Image 1 (tube, rainbow, N blue to C red):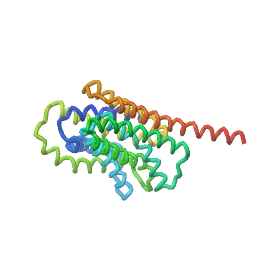
Image 2 (spheres, rainbow, N blue to C red; image 1 turned 60 degrees about the horizontal axis):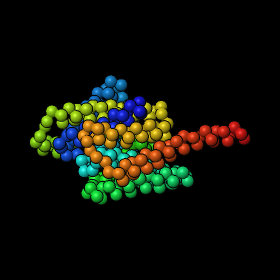
Image 3 (cartoon, rainbow, N blue to C red; image 1 turned 90 degrees about the horizontal axis):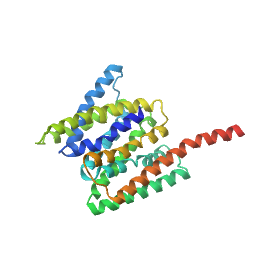
Image 4 (cartoon, rainbow, N blue to C red; image 1 turned 120 degrees about the vertical axis):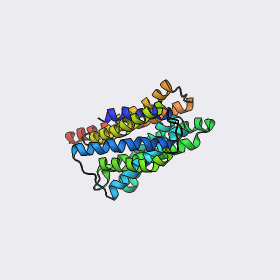
Length: 278
């Protein structure tokens, strides 16, 4: 489920590039469709929509991740937008230390250094292309995306309810921008439906279901599929070029995050062997 959700997320960059609207317009339209799909899903499984301050905080994180990524995708390359959002694990570590009082280890600090080194390479190309602001927005989307992964750490949380309210907030704030658009080509409508049904609604339904039985570290490792597929799809179908420094930065970020997760997966096995030896 987590792997399929990552693949579905990866089509976002391509679909957004072929729609001639602003990021807020696209986000409003796709999440309006997603609210209907998620709402029907909740009715089918008879899951009540809950709301409290922690669920609302999770909804705000989802809103930020959706809206900021959609805006960044129109301001910078699809590769930079998704790679910079994929820095979310670094912010998960930071927020865990600050708010959950979980002290990072040596490997955590090394991973942070490697990932932020990759970010610097992404910004080198952006300075030449004039996309610095877009990259900053994409980086902020990574901050919000970190909050999405921490939803289950919040007391009395309900991930699927946060998804519903987050999509609703996106729709309410984005639809006024969509109503101001003047061009509605067929490919834009089709892409919007694909985004709403598959890239937002179905992807988040699968992710929340998958996280219930999949360890967070394993899920984060599997999600590495997205930043690899996203720019490849855009390059193949939209012919968007990616600068050499951005490619190096992307490789560094992906290797850093995936390598960190592999170490985290191996660590429990090492501890188990140590306990058996004792």
